[in-house]
Image (cartoon, rainbow, N blue to C red; front, side, top):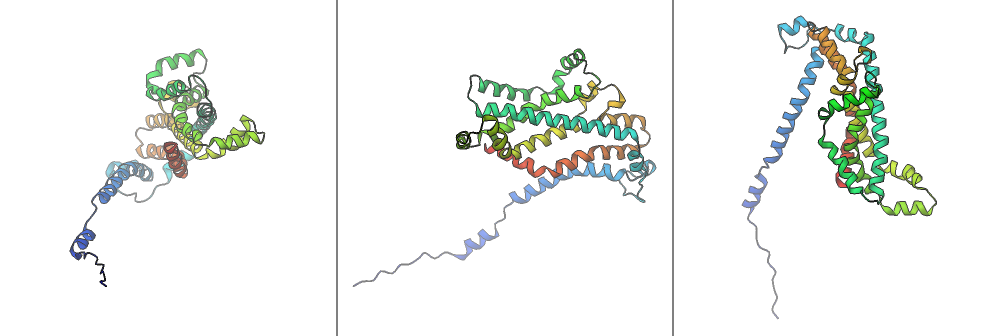
Length: 293
């Protein structure tokens, strides 16, 4: 009787060693590019914040130096100004009103497009998609005439309503995939239990669409807080100025005091940055869910 001997091919250790020594140059390059982008984005903002703790004379003497000593007068003067807090209130009202309108109208429209079958549904969705191709600058003149005829010039409502309209396309594009991804079996089960269409929307759709709603809400809030062209077009009374307009007015009024202008600019951008930083994980999750849907 003959016995068979199983042999395994021998592997030379040299190729394995060469494989271990192989360097993936793609990963370091990605980190370098990411650090460069972070530096381009963060360094100017950090420079504005830090320069607010210096005097204008120090900035003129050495613009890139570190504060020595640290001056709190600039920030204290801005925070003690009633004009600054009036502009903060106007920006807050405008941003909250825009966010509420965008989320409310956007989720209702997205729910109809995503969950209902009707003639022209695809055309309606394409119409909202085409809205991304028309920025505010294209509609400045007709929008101004429309707001004038509606007596909305010089009011915060004249800023909030157009901002809601221009934010709806991207809102619907983000929310429709979320609502389509909700299984139809949930709606059938809710219908069997006696839940109405509105009950299904309120009790099931809205909780499951939380990441998407947070995403569009944050985008609407930050976009409204940083808006400049529409408030400039609409608001003529300084008492109704939002913070971006306030920064321009303040920089013109205190053009010789550069450090004070930088302190005002730092405080004006701070709420939007904090709000965006807190909700950034929800934004990433919302956009990821929209892509998967």
